[in-house]
Image (cartoon, rainbow, N blue to C red; front, side):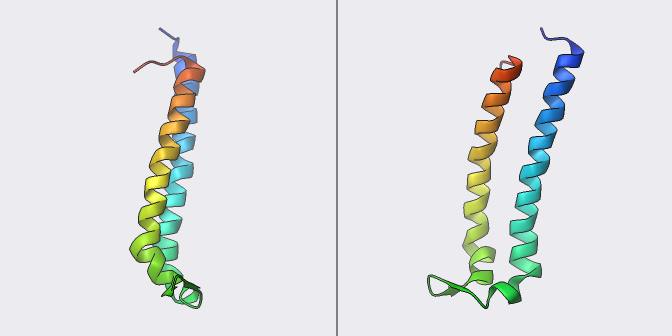
Length: 85
């Protein structure tokens, strides 16, 4: 079993990853989907206004991508610190 200092580094890095991904999630869902919707609606994507697209579909795509990024990062982190499930 790894010592506490080693595990503390593991969790610090894990929380940093979570903060990065949650920030992206917040920006895409709240900032792009609500706050900047009028400015983004000036741009069209596939015939739809970009603000509408982010609010309806873009956010979902980003969320799924964030899940895969998190899994990849955590698998690398587990290997780096030799933490098994």
